[in-house]
Every structure is written in structure tokens, then in C-alpha cells.
Amino acid sequence: MRKTLLPALSILLFGTLSALAQDRLPEIPAASLTEAQKAASAEFLAARKTPVFGPFVPLLRSPELMTNASTMGLHLRYRSVLPLRLSEFIILITAREWTQQLEWHIHAPIALKAGLDLAIVSAIQEGRRPDAMGPEETLVYAFSTELHHNKAVSDTTYARAVATFGEQGAIEMAGINGYYTLLAMSMNMARTALPDGAQPQLPPLVR
Image 1: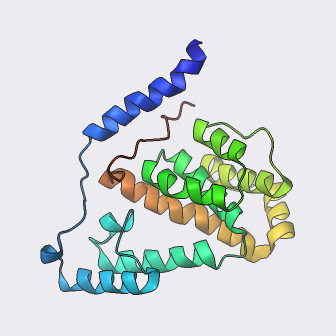
Image 2 (image 1 turned 30 degrees about the vertical axis):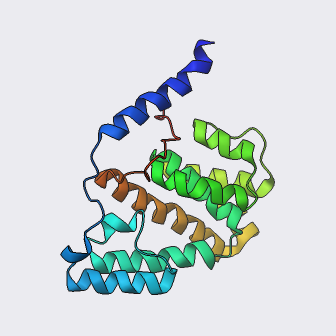
Image 3 (image 1 turned 90 degrees about the vertical axis):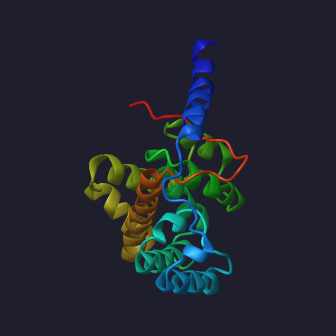
């Protein structure tokens, strides 16, 4: 009973603390945007068909960084050689590593819609290795967790990645891990808030 209650209590406590932490870099009022920020916002809208949102809100303080980050993200999300369910799996692993609530909030539904198994998503959310994964998910999990924990990828895992996805797939797996780490670090630093009414879904990691 006690073990069952701990994750729920952790989420409740973390949610309470998160709600008290003020967003350091919230949305900039339109009247306060610099010319460079206006231009970057317009470019973002043209490329993504939506106004600046989520991680790009704090990044807009550096307009060129925001624009370049958005362009990289579009490639890694939609033009990677990896299937969408696997790229989203990597994003969830990264969000979990950084306990990045907004990253998880945005991408968990996308991962499920792309075909990632709910049991895998739930295991990552809880901070544990999923019990049952297909060969591709197993490879992506090993590759990503080795990068995050060991700061390197073993020869065995690298060889499997190249054999499965080619050299482009291997570098894009590293790229997705790195890109979403950049976004997670930026949002954790900025204390980027969840949308109104949304609750934190990631309890603190215990290692």
C-alpha cells in the first residue's frame, strides 16, 4: 500500500511546488517585442502555422536562436529517417531524464497517437525500463539511456543502430536526444509553465 501511494504523493507534492514556482520567462506582450523578435515570431508562424508556444517562448529572448532551434526541430520531428513513434519515444525518454513537465505534456499524447504502446509510456513516466519492448524500441531505449547516463554509446549499441537505421538514423537519434535536452534545459531554467489547468505528470526521479 505504501509503495502504491508514493508515486501519487510525489506527483501531488511536485505539482504543488511547481505551481508555486513563477515562470521566469513568460510570453512577451506584443507591444514589448523588439523588431527582431517580431520577425522571428512571424517566421515561426509561417513555418509552423501556429504562434510561438511552449519552449520557444523563453527562446524568443534570443530570436535567432529560437528560429534556428525551430528549424532543427521541424527536421528532427518530421523529416527524420526514424518512424514518428520512435522519435517521440526518444523525446519522452529525454523529458523523463530532465523531469520536463511541458515536454511530457505535449509529447506523450503524440507518442501514443503515433503507435507507441501505453505500457511503454507509463514505464518511462514512472522512471523505469519498460518490461516489454519490440526490437526497435529496445534499441532506441538502450541508445538514448546510454547517451544520457554514460555520455556515450557502446560499440554494440552503435553497431545495432547503424545496422537498423543507417548512419543517418544513428546521428538523428543523437540529434533528437540533444535537441530535446536543449529544450528541456531551457524550460527548466526558465520555469516554463504548463497550460492553465494542466497538472504535472512526472514525479521526481529517484536514482
